[in-house]
Image (cartoon, rainbow, N blue to C red):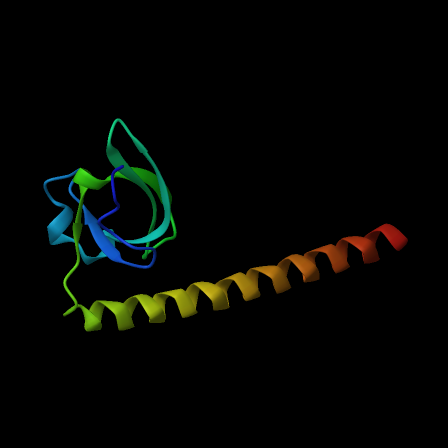
Length: 106
């Protein structure tokens, strides 16, 4: 039986592109461990910057060092901005549906 190298919540970089290490936005978080295929462990990862998810195998990842506190604070700020924008969009949709109902009543 093959054991997983990474735990849920670990931060990793994908080695799929040769430019992956140059961009801090390419940091992913392990969201789920998947069963091994042909003795290679699989993971579900989520990109920290925009939330994109994908499935990757263990050889396609390297661990991110713990000295990325500045990047973590940046991503937390970005996530906060994204949450705020979602709230604004929801309010705008509500206002748009209210005006449509007012027009339908006339």
